Each structure stands twice: as C-alpha cells, then as structure tokens.
Image 1 (cartoon, rainbow over the protein chains, first blue to last red):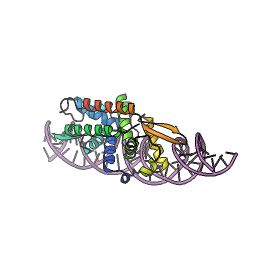
Image 2 (image 1 turned 90 degrees about the horizontal axis):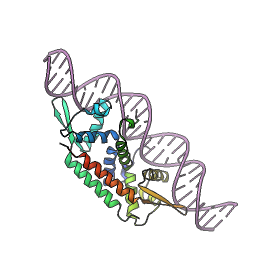
Image 3 (image 1 turned 30 degrees about the vertical axis):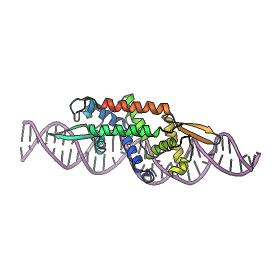
Image 4 (image 1 turned 90 degrees about the vertical axis):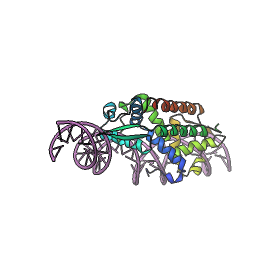
Length: 107
Length: 107
DNA sequence: TTTTAATATCGTAATATTGCGATATTAAAA
DNA sequence: TTTTAATATCGCAATATTACGATATTAAAA
C-alpha cells in the first residue's frame, strides 16, 4: 500500500486530484506568487527569495511545468519562468466548475 | 528531509497549500462528489460506492472533516456526512482570490 | 443483557514526497 | 579554449501518505 488506487477513479477525478496535489505545497504556492509579482518574468532569484536549495527549487519548478501552469524560456545561461496564463485561466474555470457542480443537491 | 519547511512560508501560503493538498487525492474528490450527488446527506455507502476498505474511507473522511469541508452527524449507529456549504463557498472564494491575485502583473 | 451493524482508531507495510549535496550540462564571458 | 554562472538531474536519507487488517467503540435490535 501507500499506492493511490487511481484505477478505481475516473479520469476527471484523477486529473483534478493531480492538479490539487501539485498546488498542495507551500513552496509551489510561493513560487507562483513570486513569478506573478514580478511584472517581468523572473528566473531563479527564487532560490534566494524562498530559501530552499537550488536543487529543490528546480524540482518544484519542474512539477509546475509538468502540469503546464508555468513555462520556461532559455535566456542566455538563465531560465526565465512565467505563468502560462491560458492554462491558469482554464484551470481556474475548471476548479470553479468542480466547486459549483459538487455543491449541487447538497443538504 | 521529507519534511516540508513550513516555517519559511507565510500563514496564507501554508493554509492554501494545506487545502489543496487535502483535495489532492482522487478518493477525496470522489467522496465529495458522491456526498453532493445524493440530495440527502448519506453515510457510508461510500465504502461500497468507492471500493476502498472501510478503514481507508474513514481516514479520508476524517481529513475532509479536519479542514471543515464536510460535517458528520450521528444518526443511530450510522454517520451522516454532508458538505459544509458555508465553508465550501468560502473556500471557493478563497481559491478564486488566489487565482486572480496571482495572475496579476504576470508576463 | 447479548448480539449485531456501523464507524473509528491503531499498527504496520508499501510507496511517495521533500530536500539536498554532488555532479552533469549548457551558454556566456574571459 | 578555459573559466564561470545558472540550471537540471541523480542518488539518497528523512519523513509523509496511502491502504488495510485487526480491534475498539457505540447504539440499535433481538
């Protein structure tokens, strides 16, 4: 055990859970907030800003990239990350749809 | 390691992450959807419906209860769970606020 | 009272996540 | 070319999560 039984759930349930899971870490929340706060896309001032090791930040960035929430662009020897605004908006709509649908018929 | 460094994040970041984390499991998504689908609050048909062991379902219910998303009421020897609609709406607003705030100033 | 049914809790095994040092890799700068 | 700086990846240790059987607990029913 310790393994989530994804087979017994439908695709939407698994996808929703996956997204929530990725957002379920304070470092990733902080990264998203910091990327957004800079009105230009910034790179790894994140290491300084957040106070986790470079390897750790890189790992978190990868997970955010995997679900498409941010995108990275090479800029010389740096990386410039920014929020993928289309995906961001789509996700927001999707979560609202989950919230709205799920509260229907409720006690 | 393996321990999340909550001290280096602010309260809101930790709280948001905590909520996302709880929602980040397909069983808990399925539980919320099923509870909502029944127009009366239902109890542990969840075990039958979802196909996880009774102990496992009970554990997931506890986590959802901990963040206040559902509430349980004793009904004879059964438990009747339902979505805490106030908390639900509050949460939805909160997440929207996160999404709206975080996309500002973005590239 | 004893039995039964529903639920919660405990203990534990399997697996996943977090975090980091060490080590690639890559591209500009010297 | 060699060096340097920024980032990614690997491998591991520490901890957390998931799942479940076994065992409490609780309240109705017999």
